[in-house]
Amino acid sequence: MFPLISVLWFVCLSSTSGDTFMGKLFSKGSNGSPTSLTNSAIAMWMQRSGLARRVCQRGISVHTYDSSVSARSASVVTGQCEIQFIKSSAGVPLSPDQKPCPGMQACVPTMSEIINLRTTNGISDVTSAINCACAPKISGCHRRRRLRVFYRNTKFERVVDVGECAGNCGQNRCQPLAIKTVAIKSPNGRKSVEVVEKCGCAHSCYRISYKKAYQVLTKKQKSNATETKVIDIGTCSSSSVCTGHVQGKCLYWAKPVVTSQQTSPFSVSSSSEKVCLLRTKGRPRGCYAEKTRVITLNTLQEPNMKVTVIDSCTCS
Image (cartoon, rainbow, N blue to C red; front, side, top):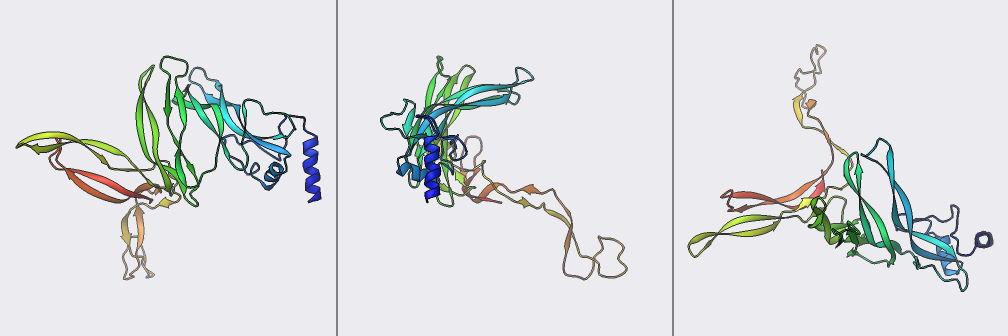
């Protein structure tokens, strides 16, 4: 214990007032989330002992990308929320951009700006943090407010609460279970923005709510009328990580020849065990529908339209 205390006091005494601790002892959480070092036993002990303060602040980073304007790479400076440890000094207040973030809380952006970049792969959106705050640790999985401003400082400026999922789900992950899209004005017409509506604990492959509208025929006062019916048909998460590989379908089965006069690998013998000699191309495992059901709708386009509804998804 004494060697550890000595090392810590050396770090504190060798740092000037208000400076961040340097070296490998502590590192920044570049995405706002506490790193293993900022949540280490040493870091917790320094907070409890009053030797250091854990703060949430906005930093800057350089994002490099392949620009379509020239053959050379381009870069843009973006804001990011990060956790830092600073030396505790009696009577020295924190700077305006530093907010106390004790314990194991996360440093997250309360407002972010969307920057449009012209890349070799088309228009790409980059998120830049404007303001940061310390988010308290919560139990369970919940939707958290996340504000993003589009086309800042222009007549097209629009702030949208896109939301995010945060919390602890044990072995599962806190995932968006329902997503909707909103349309905002942009210099190039309407832009579609995804908004998280509902969050929950789910495996890597899970069902997401997806609603579709159908114009169906109804009978009112002995005459045909139409009404819009919205059905949650569901979809499987596209960002799932399903490891493994699925073999292709076997096109030709044959029994191996056990006699000494074997002349062709396609010969058939009396052995009951068969082997596959020709398969279709295999594929990586993906997130697909596990349980489905079919409902019938009387629509304008089709009298008996069959609509498949996804109830659950699995890696297959």
